[in-house]
Image (cartoon, helix red, strand yellow):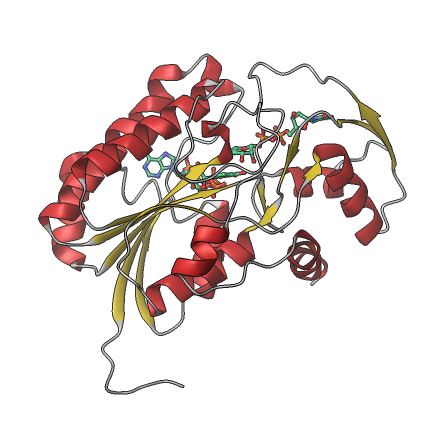
Length: 285
Ligand SMILES: NC(=O)C1=CN([C@@H]2O[C@H](COP(=O)(O)OP(=O)(O)OC[C@H]3O[C@@H](n4cnc5c(N)ncnc54)[C@H](OP(=O)(O)O)[C@@H]3O)[C@@H](O)[C@H]2O)C=CC1
Ligand SMILES: Cc1cn([C@H]2C[C@H](O)[C@@H](COP(=O)(O)OP(=O)(O)O[C@H]3O[C@@H](C)C(=O)[C@@H](O)[C@H]3O)O2)c(=O)[nH]c1=O
């Protein structure tokens, strides 16, 4: 219930036009939200970061700004590191200076992908592509600065908006798709990540560190394409293939173990199927 005596928490969101930022803006309740697009706040400009944080004086910064082009990163290494590592380090330092809690997102692609069981948050990282390496460098910078911070590793994010695998399968005119069945992960609905972030801010245990959050279960990209095809009645032919040529390598297995998150935040992570139903409903509406 809305508590009129509880002060509204002030939240500053970066990368406000991105897929996750839009979901988080929709999910946050009982907060004063200041969301800035890349045009309004370029996170690689530390002066602008300082200025915005000093003006807004947020309780939390939710950093949704990132370089997410996995294949392009192979040839744009400098840009990927500038946004995903160096800017993030500066942001962590400024957040610490202003005593603001930094909520940051990382990825399953920090792992090599040769495991047979879901990865634990403290397991060894060993990214096999530039994007993963740049995100890992961002994680390490935040941990080094060691202010109040949460790093949530999420995976295979999709939504009814933005550029993502779900939207591509749903929107392409191509009737027959060849999709890899040699990569396994956990497709995760941006709505579900956003609802969880709302919960974190509402019930902050102040137990800072690295956590995993995904929808529960695991499947290949091929199985995910088939599920989308079925839920949206697309009537496409989906063929499993062992390889699909891309510039960046991707981990063969990058399922994240979310038990620590469930315990610390007292939260039950929703299933892949429920996550997909929510995004499908949003897509159809
Ligand atoms: N998408 C996925 O599958 C996954 C994403 N993640 C992580 O989740 C987070 C959110 O990802 P997602 O929403 O998919 O990303 P998007 O690519 O949808 O959004 C990223 C946003 O960051 C903005 N941005 C880029 N550079 C800057 C900059 N220098 N200053 C300010 N804003 C900038 C972009 O703006 P513009 O478009 O104007 O450049 C864009 O709006 C990221 O940290 C990502 O690494 C983790 C796992 C899976
Ligand atoms: C277009 C296409 C792709 N694929 C394969 C390529 C790749 O292995 C897989 C997924 O491709 P995408 O490029 O959509 O997904 P990708 O960009 O690898 O998604 C990743 O994004 C970053 C930001 C993350 O952090 C990761 O968690 C993950 O979500 O599907 C096919 O098999 N057939 C096709 O026709």
